[in-house]
Length: 495
Image (cartoon, rainbow, N blue to C red; front, side, top):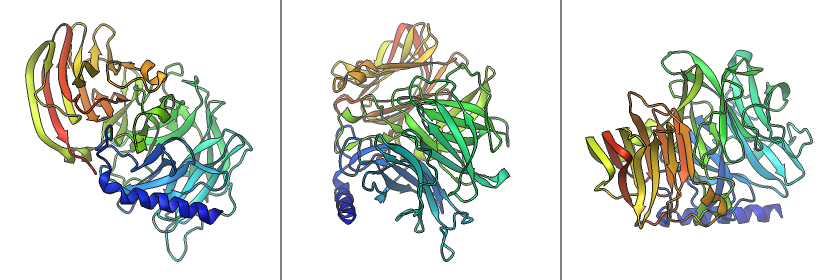
């Protein structure tokens, strides 16, 4: 039975690879975001850097285009932009699915899995038995993540709980041990553990409940980042996912306890849109590389129903992370990785132009990057994408409420799920800079990511509009707005 499962899995993988040349041209398919060749994907897992290669493992259903049969799929990149699909890494076995987790390169062979001088890559993941148990297992690879061996003494941590998942692992140098962050979803807290060998784990401390506790907590990520404008100084960022949204905390971690330095009653999010979830950062990046995270683009309230085929789900653009203090609060800054600039072509530029009502741009496309700085009108103003057939996606600034917002209520396909149509407008408070609003926009067929004021706020959303709806227009209600500058590029496909 076990051999038959793996033969079937191999057949599905090979079939996906043979189709690759005919894919990545479908309606709604993103061209410069990562998406699986075929079938379902959700959380990014096992993000690790090794010997010049970025590894992306992710939750995947090899057998269908909806959630199920959770398995770790695998892709690699040399630049965080172009990706190569590899065979399934860690497969579901019998009644045990392979849920989320992380991966490390065990350079000192603390686990003892290395043989004949080889350096093991070790994955720590949640083994999930539906409605019965979640426990933490490990597997190792001696060929850079291509093939994996599950540890014969799994589980390495089992509290006998139905909900206990999503380990995030990293090496904590000052205490010379591995740290694992694990989630108690129903109880809304993170539990920290330490280990010298990745096999035997000791409880350190708990963090939570705090902040947003409206839904289950998942996918913790604890990462040390630079403080903007203070060379050499750092803070720790703890991100958690709440079923359909995320939140973050900024503070200190001493190898045992995380201390939040932001107000306990204030909820801040790495993304204020509806479609960014389960983000984690890459492990073991080179010292000169800024901490970089990636998240799943979808939403559990409608994830299985989005109208995409033969794939479902995608990853965000990789985002570098740092923090700075704004009005006495620590704010997470996120920016798209610089390597994306290599995809730019055919720039157009507009400067010092007034807008009253609306103004259409000459270029039509669903595949673009835009830098926009404008002085808003007294009401709301900004830019619309996917314009055509009386539909559009709106990105704007509401001067009365002093919020930046996205609104997909006027886009074409919204009725495939009642939750999608009801979750249309999203906003976040933002202060103008010298009376200007700055937007950095990426539009990729069914995905929009908006980075506001150098990444102080980010909003990500999906939309599903006909390819003929490719117009772009500037708009201004309540008087005149002024385009200080607008620069836009076509973006080449990574496939």
